[in-house]
Image 1 (cartoon, helix red, strand yellow):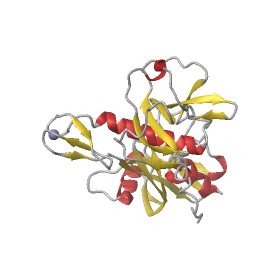
Image 2: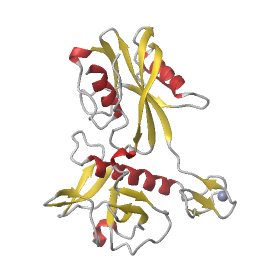
Image 3: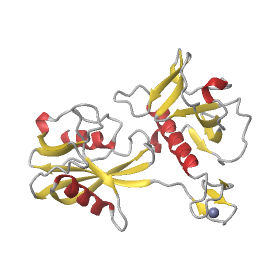
Image 4: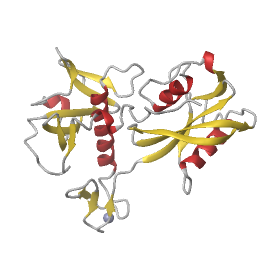
Length: 286
Ligand SMILES: [Zn+2]
């Protein structure tokens, strides 16, 4: 069986930013926002400066047309300078020297460190937007001091960042792999079966259930191989390999467009190399 020693070194995991990013107190006005680096997010996209040294995070004063009246959040330092994150203005037309790059592009154009801090900012901004009001009483929330979270001054409840655990699993049968296809993916692309953990489930239980529900296949020997933070919008993907243990392939068309057994020697188009799905497949086939 293949081994998976390097599965922690995947983009969006903190390994690529921990030497560059020092988290700060999220609500403290560390510096006037005109100085330092900016992570500007628009949906799943990151807005970068295109210069002689390639694509980099914008620095210094940012034009108003880019961020409108959105309020930045200073989350620490990046390469020794203050780091601000902010949503881009809606419906912007990007003009030089700025460019917009997708964090989840089919072909990766952004280096792993920039991709990592972009993904982190996208998760934080998504959570900030979703936690503005208290889920118990509907009151307006404000930030904690000295830790990530939101506090309701009406009912005194606290909310903490929400991350959704998912299992993603490579299923092998002799020299074949079970791959699935979602209708929303680029034409011809297949990947590993995956899904969200439910109430009361271990991640191993989740892997078994998702494969059974989506494909009718029973699996055994479910073995954890690594995990990845996935900022679309805020999942934690736990990767497993497993062995076919029975059942006929029956595709659940309410969830999937297709599922098939592929010979390892003739795999279809696969997800980008930044994904744990691709890392597990590549490592298994190596
Ligand atoms: Zn409340």
